Length: 293
Length: 314
Image (cartoon, rainbow over all chains, first blue to last red; front, side, top):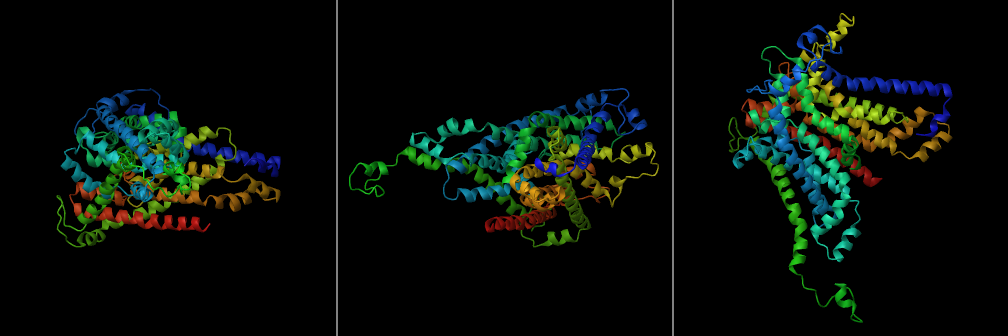
């Protein structure tokens, strides 16, 4: 893209740049607007919301809505805010991310360095797991969780998220390890190293980039999940996304928009924070599977 | 094998007369990869393929509140396609799917081309366009539900600014509610497409572009004739992923409109959930889930097939 600006005159070039920057800024505002609206609304009192409008800055900043969203808002039957649900989410997201990443890493390692007859076919079959609409496994899974005695529990949610996350994590690690030359493994085997030694000493040290990508992707997917949460849990055990939806969509009494917005921000803060801190890796994660394959 | 016969003169290294004995360690080494991969494959077999078959079976039964397993023919499918709400859901899927994909592709491409012009704040802008993807669809739905609120949101804002007759009540209008879902959905997912296109644009070979410049081609010409066609694989990837997101859309609708007003913004995913888990119609829900699966298969399989054939020919 570097040289072709020279083929345009200085004048038209400047107009062109102006148009480009204007468009970009307009779109940036369009994308930032909802975030601004959420934050601003959450800091207003209800009277101010009714009197003012969407884009107005809060005249008197109040954190009441935040306190209520965290500790006393009604999410269904109980009215103790989102803090319990926040902890629920943490309690299953962290183990699910760790487990699915770990297993995915070993799977990717096997599929690329220890190929055996049929391993590629198996990988393709597993890939299907990335594409199915989950509606088609909900009913059987609900039944199965009941039989296993882990329905409506943290363990149940961990189980579900690990099982259905394996396709993605395996894909990430496999696509990454495929570029590790087979000679490395072969040389190590000749030197007498075994399966786990090679993984520990050779593969793992190469892996930080993809581990970060996988962890961020899984964390975002599992924290933001709603479908599994709403089907496989109820009441106090619900993740924060389900609680948020209950809070916003139950229409008892006066609608407290500021509380709704504060609650939405609380629910979105962890993944947003991860994105801001490690966004570069998030991007790489998104394009890892897509562009290559 | 070579170690055995290498030292013996006249012996063909490939044909070992004495086979080295395989110890336990060797057996373990051969078995271990399969053992490691095993659980995952088992999970896939049982929890993906097995469950699909299970749901398929349920869709051929009379299950209501509790599952029944005696075969009852295609009655659920007949009931499904006699259900007005299901047809609304299908129609909405077509509308939502095509608009959502179209807007995301067009806007994503536009933003990528704009960002490709060696912009100063490129990293920052890219982060701004992409951050919605980090949010849950529930958060997005909540935010946009507020923005599109007729009494206090965008419509109110425009009226306060002087546009007295401005109406924007899509979210509570039965015929228009699905378009509100498109707006929120496109806002969330365009950044992702933009990121893919940007990566694709950056991968275009500079030599070809320079050659075209030397030949005197204008900027627009270069874009339309060289660069955009070379983005075909990215179009394809984006299309698959967007189609996939559209077919699975559940969270966004639940948060933004709850499927309403009434069921005017229902999608197959919300239909399945409501009938299987709220209305105690397991059989019907299973049938709708199978239809969703078949839609995904019907769209994605031909696409993947045609693209891989293209690659093999090229």
